[in-house]
Image 1 (cartoon, one colour):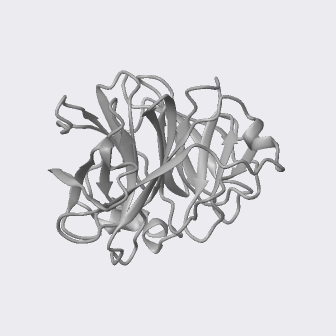
Image 2 (tube, rainbow, N blue to C red):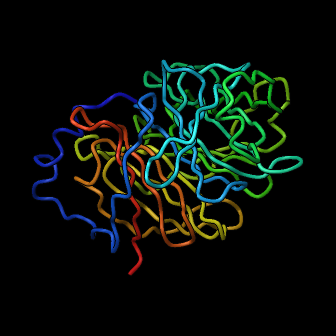
Length: 293
């Protein structure tokens, strides 16, 4: 997602509004050092390599997964063969048959016209060899789910994977409010479009003037909470066993990032936030935040 005028106008738009509290902890840990990672639109913490994170660029870029550490140090880039980046907007890691998989959401749709979108699922590498050996063109273990919505196309930049490999999707909020959909694990490899099920209309009122459009989501390691972020806020929702969300705790992120796009849990209390870069920064900033006291 390219930089929006709403982000630049936030101070005026926020005037006179009651704001959520600031995070109890908010520390910039670094900036992205890979010059090719300019539009980070999602972040995921590796389950196979300690201290390693992954990110992706959004629409119009190569189908590449970037590896980095919490300081932003570049650890390599993996151009995934056999897939395309029409509008990659979210990244998650979750279980899949035989291990841990990266879920890449090619679900961006600014004009909300795509009749179906794609979620790619590929086995998470156990080492950084895939990211450092540029001569390796071996096709990875890869499948995908073709997804459509029961009402109309949506712009989606947020997803997380459940314990069964099912996928939860949260709409950005361009119209019809902010909706939570679910895609069953059987959608992967089905060979035909699967209609996502509507789980919930979230009590989160989109407001472009204050940056309240959903840009990412992540499930906590203990499975009890979900973080949903906008450009300027962080919502921590209780996650119910049936997949619905309860009443959230809210943190105010306004002014912390130039264009906040990614969120991932470091542990059950602290989260990693990533942003697209500003014009005066070499790379997008990375923050560690905690809303709980």
